[in-house]
Length: 116
Image (cartoon, rainbow, N blue to C red):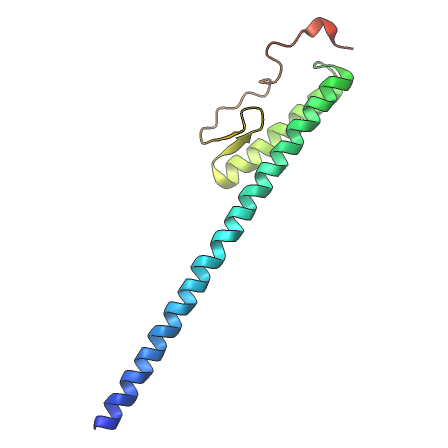
């Protein structure tokens, strides 16, 4: 009888240890991927913001090229918002947790008379 209890206790201990190890691996393994997805989303927004500034610099803020870049930036913001419920503001260098962007936020204060 004593041998049976010892074997049973060892088996339960091994199962608990294996379950704890598996849970730890799953928990810690998911965190880096979430950070990587977060960073990929931020990078996507930085690129879209940069393309808008480039289009405006070369073709003017009211140009079809700038409008296309605005559209791409809006899509990138929508993507990040739908996936993470936040979006990166490259000009403000911060995350926003409200869906408070303005598609023409880059146009404010721009001299529209100097567009090409």
